[in-house]
Amino acid sequence: MDNPLTHAADFFDDGSVESSKIVSRSVGNRVLTLVCIALSFLAFVPLASILYLVVKNGLPLLDWSVFTQLPPAAGMTGGGFGNAVLGTLVMVGLALVLSAPPGILAAIYICEYQPRGRLAGMVRFVAKLLTGIPSIICGVFAFAAVVLSTGKFSAFAGGVALAVLMLPTILLTAEQALLGVQKAYREASYGLGATRFQTILRVVLPDAMPAIMTGVMLAVARAAGETAPLVFTALFSQFWAKSLMEPTASLSVLIYNFSTMPFEHQVKMAWTASLVLVFLVTVTNITAQLVFSKRQS
Amino acid sequence: MTADTMSEKPPIAVRPELSAAATPEIEGSSAGRPDFITVRDFNFFYGRKQALQEISLDIPERQVTAFIGPSGCGKTTLLRNFNRMNELIDGISHTGDIKLAGRSIFDPGIEVIALRRLVGMVFQKSNPFAKSIYENVVYSMRIAGVRERKVLDDTVERSLRAAALWEEVKDRLHESALGLSGGQMQRLCIARAIANRPKVLLMDEPCSALDPIATMRIEELINELKREYTIVIVTHNMQQASRCSDFTGFFYLGSLIEFDRTKKIFTNPQEKRTEDYVTGRFG
Image (cartoon, rainbow over all chains, first blue to last red; front, top):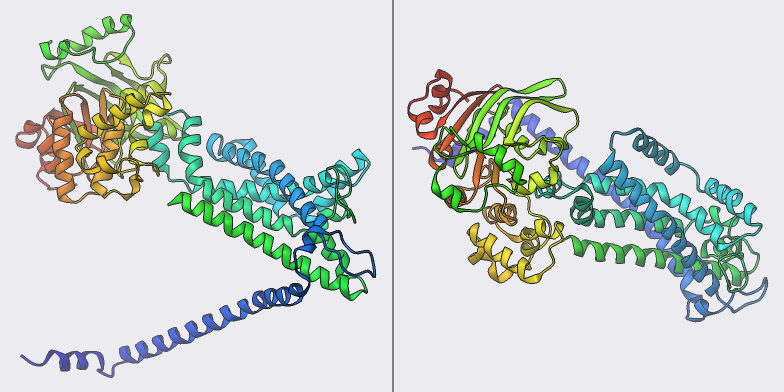
């Protein structure tokens, strides 16, 4: 028998058209891989530079007092933005309470009860339209619906504006989450004599919950950073809010106000507020992912 | 009517006036045992497409009945009519009737939920819930509102023993069912299906995703379970049908070609097409 290795070498290196094509294909493969790596870095640069700037400019003023003190008046130094942190938390929390239950229940309806019904089709269509609507429109809507009818700017109006913004995102991600539940689970449950309600409650929802919560957290993270819906609705306040029905400060509006002021201290404070906002959103996201990915496994 | 069928509790929890009506059906069984499921002139449609044509057959009690035939022949469709599982699909319709212990399963007075508690199902792909082994088994009890710890514990042990799984999992009942092997998962699904003591066990190709050893264990289990349950099994595996069934129905293009004792189907079929199929000439 001849040496199999020389045989193999002959086989691969016979100088035919085939082998030259193989060389050009593998060169193309390497070039494209390099291009992909380079472009990934390019996409990473703006993200990293935002984080870098926010941390670099925000850290100097960051201490515990920014969470406990009220914003400094124009031209003054010291102070903090405790009322804005609280206001953001309250308004996002209110928006969550207003939008998550109807959003998730509507998703259950359009996914589990009447997926091909007219109402389901309408809800789905409107939700898709709403996700594309600029956030400032949500603010205008809440201004007309709440501020004009109650006669005052308030945290409640801000919460409504954010809820309108969050609702379609929650609804559509929850629908996707429910669609992702294996048919086999539903069949097993129905096969054991469960009703539709029992199947949804005991099998479908627990399985879809991590994905639903991820959608909710995405909506929360987006809402927490919105300025436009709040400038017409919650407005701003230099003081601690005493009720839901009065003008309320928020981090995003504070950043907007302070960053355009001609005072160095206020601009620095806007950076610090940005850092706090980014931190809050990140912590919410990571916590949600940790909690819900653990439940899944 | 043989003595052993009468010594047990009545075959199905029917109202008294219905058990009287059931008696004539039980007479004249081809198996010498009462016919538990009777199918008469059954046609079934997905939208306009007819999937089953004029099916009539009698499935005897506490025997294993196998449905064989090439893919798309309607055997699974018929199986999924026995617990009205097809109703999860839009646009289905049927004519003819299926009776369980003498009573039509399409009777408006029958709750489909009650029917499915009497007719358990094991699916082709094992589908334990993402819950603990314990919670998987007691699922049918939980949805029926059973809360007594003792009842639930006993059910878990009895069902897992019946499914030949108890010894393997008794020390990890509260661990996730998704950590089991493929064969164990399928036995868990059987335990789950028999937890609330159904009368009929439908098995839709229960071994098609399993290795030969796991398949053998399930087949042994089927032999055990037929002492208590009427079993209908759909299978692509003709050796499996011949090994573990008492009766076999051969389906082709939505029709029941032949239905007889398994031994007869495999050794002396009446129909040419049956013979061609069981000898592997087509399919």
